Each structure stands twice: as C-alpha cells, then as structure tokens.
Length: 172
Image 1 (tube, helix red, strand yellow):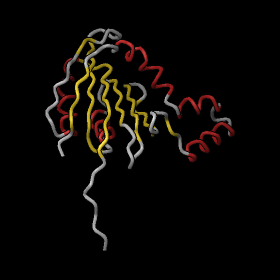
Image 2 (cartoon, rainbow, N blue to C red; image 1 turned 135 degrees about the horizontal axis):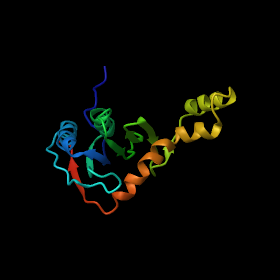
Image 3 (cartoon, one colour; image 1 turned 90 degrees about the horizontal axis):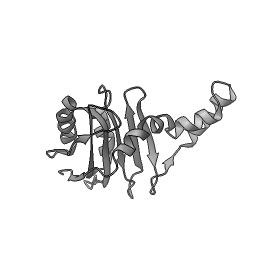
Image 4 (cartoon, helix red, strand yellow; image 1 turned 45 degrees about the vertical axis):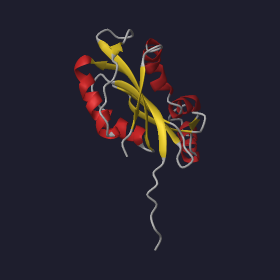
C-alpha cells in the first residue's frame, strides 16, 4: 500500500463577469465565496455594452479545478455572461470556460502560454463530421476554438478595459 499525497496543486486564474443584472451581483459573490472559502466582495462597475448590466473581475489563487467549480456554480444563470480562466501548473493543464445565456458553457484546455489545446479525439471527430457533410471543417475548427463564444463576448470584453481587479486566495 502506498501513502497518498496530501499536496494539492495550487494555481491562479481570473473570473471575468462580463454582464450581470444588479439583483444577481450578491448571489454571484456568494457562489464564488462558496468555492474559494473566503468572503468575496467584488468592485462592480456599469457594463457600457449593455444598459442596466454590471461587470466585475476577480483574480484568485487556489487549487487546480477552481475555475471548473466556479463555472459549475454560475452556469445556467439567466442574463449572466462570464469567463473563468485557470493557469496551467506543473501538475495540471490550464482551463478556460466561457458562458453566455444563448450558447451555454464552452470549455477548453489551455497550455502554459494560454493557447487552446485540442485533443486528438476531438480533432478526429470534427474531421469525421466535416467528411460526412454534417458541417464544414472551418465551422468545426471555429467551434473547437470557441469562436461563437468569443464573438458574443467580445463587445463585453472591450467595455471592461481599465476596470478594477481584486486578488483573492483560496483558504486551504
């Protein structure tokens, strides 16, 4: 029998709330706090790309998988657009999650420099769909890279330039 290691991989990431209705803002803070294990109070600013919406950013440090847990807490909420990123570490790939009300959640593995990493199986499946005429190869590659999500989120990203960012660390 071997002893199990209690060392946990620590990484960092950023949560971008691109647009949320004001009434949802405290619920987002509570949901993120439940994942990070610390109180969360975001600096909410108006989202110029959509009237009556708010935006915020949060940089965090925590265990590998934190971005996925944050996404699980927030996915499916009406009128919420967000992205959660997690940096790659020595022991795990990075991840990028994007979510919009119309498209749902997109997930991609990312490498050390933030580039999207697409597995061989996903590439083979995309090629097969294109070969069968179910889609074009261009559309398949765009979907693998998250282009529909990028297209929808881009106006909200630009509107957030210069917004304040807060750092939080997950409690062990």
